Length: 221
Image (tube, rainbow, N blue to C red):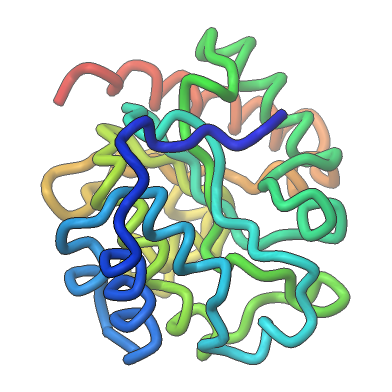
C-alpha cells in the first residue's frame, strides 16, 4: 500500500528548506518545524535527516503513512527490516496483526488512520532505540502530531508511551487508562503488536480492550 499524502499543493522550495534547516538546528520541539509547512513538506525534509547515527545504516526513512487528517493516530517504536526495505511502518507480522485487530475492534482500515514511529530509521539488529536517537527524532514525531491533529493517539509499547506521556512507568502500568497529551488529546497506551505475538491470548485480549477504549473516544473531543 502506498503512503497517503497531504492533498494540499506542493510546498515551495523555500518552505522545504526552512523545515530542513529547523530540524538540522536541533530544535527541541516541533514549533520551528511546523510553522507554516504541510505534512508533505515535513516528510520531504525528514528523508534527508542525519541528526543521529541511525541515518548511516538505514535503507530509507520510514516517516509514516495514512490519512493526514485522521482522528486516530498510532505511534510505535521504530522500523524493522521489512519496514526499512519498503519505507512504510508496520508492514511485517506485527503490522498485519495490528491491521486485523483494528479492523475487528474499531471497524477501521489503514487508510482511515495515521501510523508513525518514535524513530524514523531502523536501529541495527532491531535493538531498542537509544535516548539520544529518540531525542533527535522527537521533533519529527511532534510535527506529525501537530499537523495531523488527531483526537486520539494510541501508543504501541513502552517507548512511544513513555515519550508522549513523559513518564518512566512501563506499559503494563500505563495501559488500561486514558491519559492526556498536550492540547487535550487523548492517549491510549497499549502493548506493541510484537509483544502480543509473543504474549498470547491474555495480551491480545488486553490490546483488544484498549482499542475498544480508543474507539469510544473518537469524535468525543
